[in-house]
Length: 172
Image (cartoon, rainbow, N blue to C red; front, side):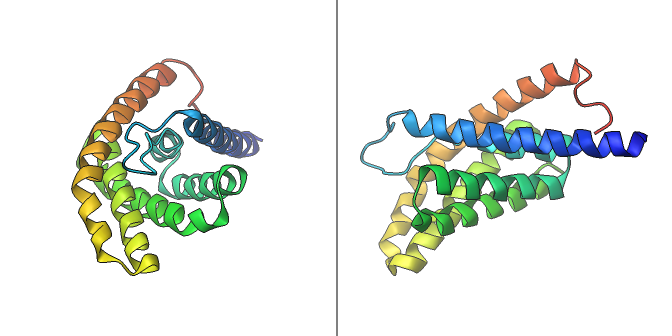
């Protein structure tokens, strides 16, 4: 009976993280662009769910949550043409964060994920648009990714500290 409860709690936690990510992604689309000259620059609020899943549930649930939030977010708030960019960014960010968490703390892992996400999206853009000039965005996007990734990492660290003081993460 305990195993069924644990499984139900894990699945419920995963579903709540996907829902939270989709809501955060929707909210983020309402925020005006910080840099109008650089289209597509976002904070990456939905990545908080991937970070939470990585630290609370493990690597496999984290990639499942990342892909689910990307698919749902794309179909709800964007066009299907955004899917290759989002998937490439999300999958590379997940992979880099999985490796990075063995070495760095939460803010560093978040920063690495943000940078990897941007690099993957630029590579997809270069491939789809057949234009290497897009690589010149990398320095600017990296600076922005470092700032937003680090801040979101601290948000996640504080969230994690708060949640761990409760009994919400027991038996998952």
